[in-house]
Structure formats: C-alpha cells, structure tokens
Amino acid sequence: MNIGIVGTGYVGLVTGACFSESGNNVICIDVDEGKIKSLEKGNVPFYEPGLDDLVRKNFKEGRLHFTTDLAEAVKKSFILFIAVGTPPNGDGSANIEAVLDVARSIGQYLDDYKVIVTKSTVPVGTTEMVREVISGVTDVEFDVASNPEFLKEGAAVEDFMKPDRVVIGADKASVAGILKELYSPFVRTSNPVISVGIKSSELAKYAANAMLATRISFMNEIANLCELIGADVSEVRVTMGADSRIGHSFLFPGIGYGGSCFPKDVKALIKTAEKLDYDLKICRVTDEVNTVQRELFWRKIKLFFKGELKGKKFGVWGLSFKPKTDDLREAPALFIIDKLLSLGAQVSVHDPVAMDKAKEYFGTKVNYAKSNYDVCTDADALIVHTEWNEYRQPDFEKMKKLMKLPVIFDGRNLYNSKRLENLGFQYFGVGISNICS
Ligand code: NAD
Image (cartoon, rainbow, N blue to C red; front, side):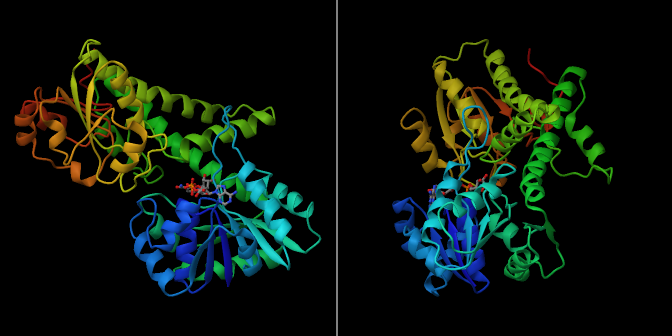
C-alpha cells in the first residue's frame, strides 16, 4: 500500500519505518526541514533502540521516503496518518491545532479517494473535526478513522512490530477492513485488532494512559505511607503484585511519571470531562500526587542538607524520563536539577544517551561527565533519577572512595537499603523506612 505519515517524531517515524519494513511504500512528511535532511542522510534525530537500522535499511531499499512536501505526499498516498504533536495548552487541554492544520492541507491537496487516520493522541471528537475540516475544502470523496498508538519510547519498534493490540476506530466496515489489512503482518500471532467506534477509539487511548498513570500515583502514595509507618514498599509491592488480579506491572514507586504522554494525557482527559461538567476525580488526584511526588523527593534532599545547598556538589545519574530513551520531556530530573541550581549547588550529570538533549536544556549550567563514576568525584551526594540498567550494580566501594560524603538519594529504588547501610552509605529511597526529617 502507499502510505503517508504526517509528523516524523517518535510515533510517526516508528510507524513509517515499521510499515515500510512490511513491504509498504511509505512517505514520511514533516515541517522540520532539518529533521527531513538528517533522515535522508540516514540519521535518526532521537534515540530509539533498533530504529536507526530499520530506517536506513528501508530508505536504502527504496520503500521509505522523506519530504517536507505535503502536496506530493498526499498525491502519492492512499492512507494518510496524522501523527503530529498534541501538546498541552496552558489549561491542560490538548492542543489539536497542528492536527487540524494538517487535515486542512490534506483536504486542499486531495485528488482521489483516500483514508485519513488520526494516529496522534487526540480528544474525543477530533477525528470528526478532521472530517469536517477536510469536507470544508474539498468535494473529493474520503473517509476518516482513528488509530491511536500504544508504543512505548525505549521499546517503540518492538511494540509496533508486536503490539498487544491494534485499535481501529471507524464508522464504515470498509475503512476498518483497509486498516486491518495494513496491520495484518503485525498481528499474526493472534494479538487482536480491536475494531470500535471512533469516539471509543479516541477515548480508549486516554483511558489506558490514565489507568497506568493512576497505578503509579497509587503506589507513590502507598510508598509515602510506608515511610511514615516504617514499612518497606518493595515488600508491599511484591506482595500486592503476586495477586493475579493485580499483577506486577506499573507498581514501582519513584519520583513520579514524566515523558510526553502520561502528564499531558491525564490533564487532557480531565479537561475533556470538565467540558462535559464531569469531575474526573481519580485522574485529578493522580495528576496532583504526581506533582507532589517529585517535590517530596526534593524536600528529602533539602532537609538532609538543612537547606544549605550553596556550593554543595551533586552527582546525577539519569536524566531521561525513563531508560532507553533520550526524551527529557517532563523528566523529573529536570525539576530536581533546576531546584539544586536555584539554590547555588553544583551539579555534574550523566546519562547513557540523553547528554546532547541535556546540553540543549541546561547549556553550561551543569557539568557533563564522561562516565557515571566521574559524577561521584568530590560529590556531597549522588541522586539517581532514571533506572538505566548500567546503574543497577555499580561498584559501591569505588563510589565511596570518590565521593566526599557517601550519600545516595535514589528516586527509583535501585538498591538494597540494608546492603548500602552496611557499606557505610546513607541511603534514601522512596517508600523505604529511613525518612530523613
Ligand atoms: P514529536 O514531537 O516527537 O513529533 C511530532 C512531529 O510532528 C515533529 O517532528 C513536528 O515537527 C511534526 N509536525 C508538527 N506540525 C506539523 C505539520 N503541520 N506538518 C508536518 N509535521 C508537523 O511527537 P510524538 O512523541 O511522536 O507524538 C505524536 C503524537 O503521538 C502525540 O499526539 C502523542 O501524544 C502521541 N503518542 C506519543 C507516544 C510517544 O511515546 N511519544 C506514544 C503514543 C502516542
């Protein structure tokens, strides 16, 4: 099939590369000329495991193309996916301007029957608005559908290639059939294609993200209670997860969720409900707990140093909002480092892949270390923000020798508190009984 993907970010590029890998002819379109030029040279502008190889291979074999020319792409494509960003407005609602702009342009260039699909995460009613916007500028026949994306950054290619489920929201069986055929190579092992109405499809994406975010916030509250009670949240978590009705996923407490999806999608869902005079209480509190969680972690650091942070040296392990990505959007690390800097602390950072993106954000305000041990040199404390595998079993003796004070604030509970105490560290995790107040 001839496919056009408008928006060549995390979702658009993975979608385009994976569709081309299954033999389709794919054009990826973006307004960012730099991004398109870099992709034409085979350079993926962000870190995503396995994506470079897939892009280079399919580009070389002539199935994957890049352009800024939407008119040409519309002409050559039978299915057009809209995968542009839907960032939050100031009030938390989703900004769908880019989606509607793209829809209008597609309408203006439409020359034959095509299917236009919203892949971006969009509030209920947006796909219908896409239909109205296109109808307003053309008489050419077309159909719309919703096909939200569930991939996870850090495992995006694998998620797309082997999805838990594919959701297709369409009001015509013929349209659902076209998309089902396109996805058939990815669901050969019986994972379902779920065909639903357009509104249900749009809402399902938000509901799924809000549920996952709620599990995290729930566990963060349990962790905070553990600290007050003197229980260990790791033990509570394992016990809870052993119940097959609960399961072990998404029960890890920490410094709160970040990234480009959970924070914005929870807020947007609350706004969708608000417009209908419905108070989505659970989501509201999920969001609130998430904001408070990083503040509580910061308070621990501040309390330990009695508020005297000027001139203190901090080593930081992990900047991205989760491992295996360089995405810093809404990363808790940025919040903590900004706080440290605002009180005059010196910060040395390490992240396996997000250092370039961090340079764009922090400039010369922090030191960029060559290795994770380098940040420990003369440090008054080490702060762990991201659970990268390479931080899981470090050489603690070496760290202790390098650090001025053997103090670790661990926002991801990577280490065993008793073991670290035996090694002579002061260790502060999340939901582990040693609260420092
Ligand atoms: P992104 O910011 O990485 O990419 C968006 C791309 O769209 C950018 O390259 C931008 O230049 C381009 N763009 C903006 N306006 C355009 C226009 N008018 N024409 C052409 N291109 C344009 O965003 P993303 O992370 O890929 O997210 C895209 C959508 O997918 C969002 O709605 C997001 O919520 C959703 N989503 C994201 C993820 C994720 O993990 N990132 C997962 C599932 C769903």
